[in-house]
Image 1 (cartoon, helix red, strand yellow):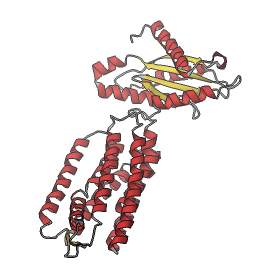
Image 2 (cartoon, helix red, strand yellow; image 1 turned 45 degrees about the vertical axis):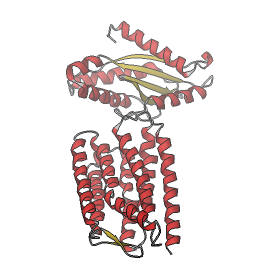
Image 3 (cartoon, helix red, strand yellow; image 1 turned 90 degrees about the vertical axis):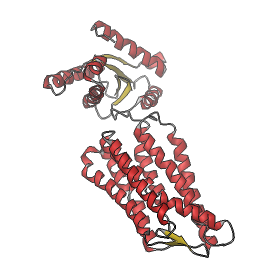
Image 4 (cartoon, rainbow, N blue to C red; image 1 turned 30 degrees about the vertical axis):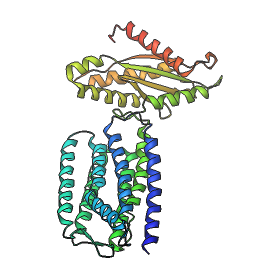
Length: 379
């Protein structure tokens, strides 16, 4: 019987590890590798792979007199020792989605205390079999304190749920459902594990949840600017090349490159936090000035790029005028300690020019700096 169970668990875990390795390699394409979201997500991937390996070790029941008992004991010990790590990382991931990096260090310290307390209990209780014990036949059994580590896991997952539900207005709508769904597969697996002795598919449930998060949040973040939450440079390059390739004599597009005026002055006089706020406000303001089928991206630094769908032959100058009107109205409101203003370069792509994406971008960039110099605005 133990041979069948071992083969079954090894097969399931290796399959899950293969999925996670694919996600790891695909996540390396992310241009925002310095973002905390990316780092936490990668820690979740690596930790899950490690826990799956340990889980396989813990399945080596039976065969006294072989190396099985040693492998079994090592696997079970570290599984209990590290059990709160994954839910802790998930709680951090949820917190970041809601509050970004605000006071996240306090949560990190609190979770370190929880994990350390669990580790101390597991280390000292292993001599008494409080968490688990292995009989003379090398068969694993739950100890009287088994539910302690399970309760810690459930408490951390519940805390993540509470954060998600009570802060749903802070979370982007397209991410909200994915965050809620994350805890469902592991919760079902925990219930099955408690009810049916010998069934342990918790980590498989977590892998399914990780896959949901990857498809709906992480994969999209590869193409999303970390600060402003609009498209990033990578997304722009792909979109622009696609628009150029689809151009015909009657179908084209227009583009506007915008540079936020006096951004360095805002940073130097009001601080980098206010500077970040100015970029975020600019992105929202510009997004409100374009249509649903138009495209906006952060080009880099304090520069933004708008690509106007030219199906109805709209004049890009109309968009420029609309942006200037929105900026003037916003500045008159006095909501912020800074004033917004943009230098802009705009042009319609000529399919007969055979310009590549890089050449067209240089052309727009030149027009933008001509506008900046004409207004005598410092770089």
